[in-house]
Image 1 (cartoon, rainbow, N blue to C red):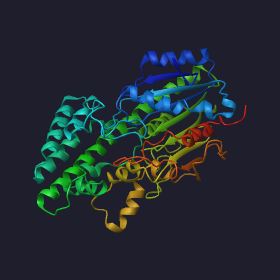
Image 2 (cartoon, rainbow, N blue to C red):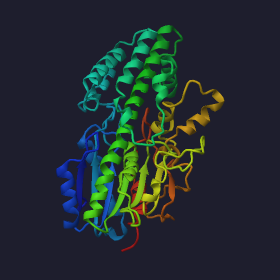
Image 3 (cartoon, rainbow, N blue to C red):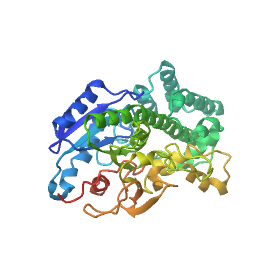
Image 4 (cartoon, rainbow, N blue to C red):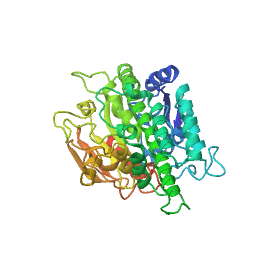
Length: 436
């Protein structure tokens, strides 16, 4: 156990199958009653390169909490950080952390090459055939042949990374199949149009320029494919790992109030933990609030009926009832990762121009417009101290367009989350904003 801002803090690591580190889980289970914790705020990160970066994220967020509480009082409050194997591409920055695209993989020097960026994924794609695919993908991005067959080969190699396809949680219905099944030049062309061309690249209409743009799109398609794989992994870790652990905590610490917070794919992880939570039956769920910060998964996940097929529900249909309190999301138009690239991966080349808007809505993410096809209230993300009207069992979609604004392409403001307004939303949803 450690401390953040004078409050007890634990970290719990999970592997890709959702198995918790036994020592971490035991320390948390024993530590909660020993420290007198009655309210536990559990945060799951999105894509991060290593445990150190995840810990830094948690500290930047949690250390703001006591200062925003009425009188700075936090009796019985504790924090926990979920550590799971995900990966942020090394050319993407987190606002305010001083890293990202301006630095090399070691944190200094020139921006990493495309080949180095792909090679850096080897610690999360560990199977021999995946490592071999990464080597060839990196070489193709380094050489960028003016050859349609090379683009087709690149797409085929992308499929080699999708080994977790059969491990997705039951009820999953989010489609990235267009990435691997559509004609490669069509797929890569869509992504080339969605992201700015690298600095210095001309707009000449020659064949070489056309292939250069397609290879830029191929890189972004690969980025999205790797994130889709981690998105699926987040669901597995949530349902197979975090959910059962929360059930264990509730069994050993009766009356414990758990407040789940997740960012990006971590929002998906904590959401799917509800499906792995032991059914509370006639009793009340230990999960007392849920906050999804720029969630990178379907905005229809909790829907009882999908807008395009009323006979079917979202992957988490009925799971909102396992939160004995309010549910909330943040969203921002400045989040390019969720608002543009995420649905683009599922957009088929067969969607005509008139249907693109509908297709983008069909495949949209929580971080773009909040929870959809569920009872929800939309309110602006307000300053710390502003009261919110939050209802148990009801979604509140916090509009962060004026707050979550900073970030460069391709992800935009996806990770611009360390604002007092966002922390205050977490405090409010958890019911900790009441005067002592």
